[in-house]
Amino acid sequence: MPYVTSNGIRLSYQRSGQGEPVLLIMGSGAAGHVWTTHQTPALNEAGYETIIFDNRGIGASDAPPGMYTLAEMTADTRGLIEALGLGPCRIVGTSMGAMIAQELAGQAPHLVRSAVLIATRARADATRRALAEADRALRESGVRLPPRYEAMRKVLEMLSPATLNDDTAASGWLEIFELAGGITGDGGQAGVDRAGDRREALRTITVPCRTIAFADDLICPPHLVAEVADAIPGCDHVEIPDCGHLGNLERPDAVNAAIIEFLAKY
Image: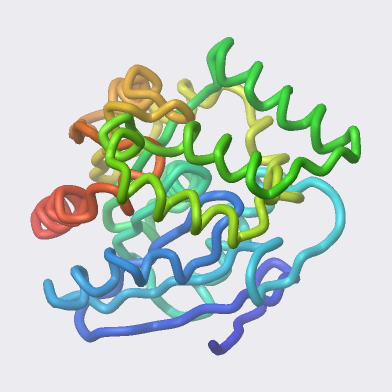
């Protein structure tokens, strides 16, 4: 993968397909190539060029020490768009990537043609704050859970009952998470979750946006995604059943259809 330097950080990126550009921004703890399992092939087939990249702290991109802020990671992505001459481009973000997309849409509308915000939120409620604090306490304790236990916890947290109750699907996901090493936390990217309540800032966004919620998402539940849609003027909202926080991998056909249908309009 080639590299570009943005905001003092060397970011690894990859382009594929031909057509108008779509930049995809991945969530915390995952590399950009996760998009290539389902989303970039569908977008390329629909006639778009796709650009994926590894956020700071993951994959082949630089991983500076310390906790990262939402402002830093937004500046990274903005610099990538500017360095590659993509703007104004369509952007698609999931989870932390959708938080970055929110900020870009508000701060740099000249670089953003439209935005799809997947599994997103503008704040953490009491349950999500407790979950983040529990993860932080475990990380800071230095305790390392056995990969098999951590894999089971992540599967319960990230997937829907529809997947968990399917023996074949659940077994496959457990194997994937266990092979990944059962890593707890997202390193420096975990700091982005401390960004506070951004609903008021969302009211200034002027570019077309769509939010996509997953009915069984424990990390960004539908009511928090709906808050984002309510705050952004003119934002429309789609909810997809039978999937959890990793809905783009659990229900890729439905997610891809929702992305492409929106991008075709804006």
